[in-house]
Image 1 (cartoon, one colour):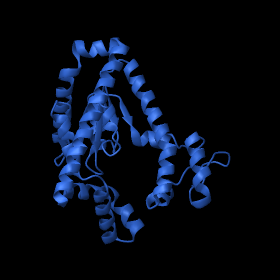
Image 2 (cartoon, helix red, strand yellow):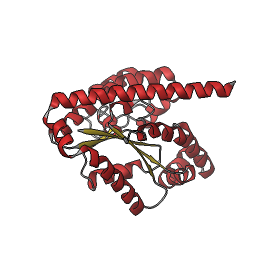
Image 3 (cartoon, one colour):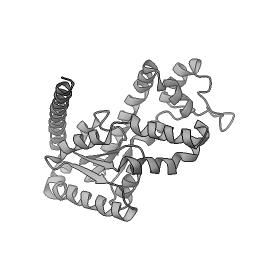
Image 4 (cartoon, helix red, strand yellow):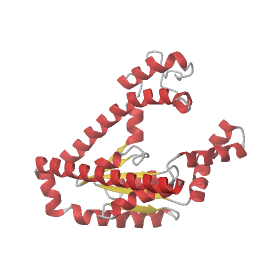
Length: 274
């Protein structure tokens, strides 16, 4: 089974693409953001660990409980503020949540494989930043121009940002800060270009409308499926040891490629400084 890594920056339309992949192309979706919320739901081990560690220093960590007998949910905004400028706190939060997220992802990947799907979609906003492309057999990056990205973010979150920041002008500054805080789109495209060299990377431009996006996504899946279905796909599904070997080889090859790429980019930066 092919694991397709889907990623993109904030407000580029990644969620729309993931919806198209599930609704129109019937691929199972493994949503990292959804899993991240599930593993810290009230009563879970992740929730208990976060409350135990952060509650003494974060008075507004918990929201009002839905019922007297149920544990109060996490105030995710307060938790985000708590770790925003504290590397040690962020490291602790990641040490709690990341293993739980990875475990859930693995379980869902195995389930998709056992159900006979030829591919599944791993939707991870920080796929490239976290180095998780190493477990994927293909990568799809959703991009758009910075101005389109900013306009979509304001259309989606403008009112909330204005209320939190204290005005439209402050909201626009916050929106631009959020866009700029993520890995630059140019850098992400360079990373995926490495995948395109052997036909395993696709960049989906999303500056147009929904119908145009549907056509582009359909073309990508058609190209992916061309090489992953048929005898090869059935061989991987029907022989788990062979599938595991292919997965291990893909992981090793991807890891070596990205190490080489990072080394080359580091060398270029060093020369530029001279």
